[in-house]
Image 1 (cartoon, one colour):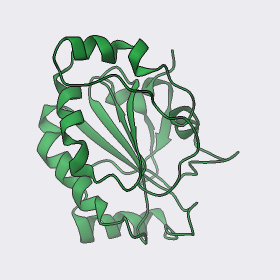
Image 2 (cartoon, one colour):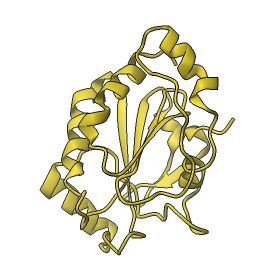
Image 3 (cartoon, helix red, strand yellow):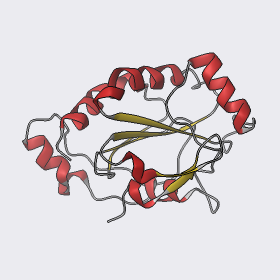
Image 4 (cartoon, helix red, strand yellow):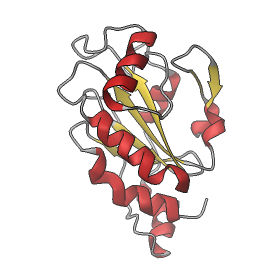
Amino acid sequence: MTTLADFTATTISGQDQQLADHLGSVVLVVNTASKCGLTPQYAGLQALHERFGEQGLTVLGFPCDQFMNQEPGTEEEISEFCQVNYGVSFPMFAKVDVNGEGAHPLYTWLTGAHEDAADSDIEASDAAGDGITAAAIDAGDIEWNFAKFLLGRDGTVLRRYAPAVEPADIADDIEAALSAQA
């Protein structure tokens, strides 16, 4: 079974990183943009990072310029924008495509078909009382900036959230995933 551990990505500072480094953490993967109506979600993502980071949450930001060129800057400009305007301290990566032939392999996997949560460990986790309920994970292209994917400690996809879903609104799911056994 494919997991987060099967991918590498280039950090915003230009280093290749094995995403396996994040196994054991609950991971929230988000495609971001600096000139979007949803850009203020950076503040909410940073708040999640600060609230849950010591418990094992890692937020991974992937800038993307595929939606109306709302991320036109260089990696250096993006990094500076995120730090100056939102105090972003969670890991950011180099700009990627999330849809189409040039999509980063991570996003090809994230947007692909995943085992129904009803048939996976999520149902067993819910039976354990951790609050994660079984639900299908939608496949298909990313619809806009700030689509979010919640991954369990084992690197599998637990949930997909639409771009308009505010980071604070997924805090309960993050807490449930953090309390689940890996």
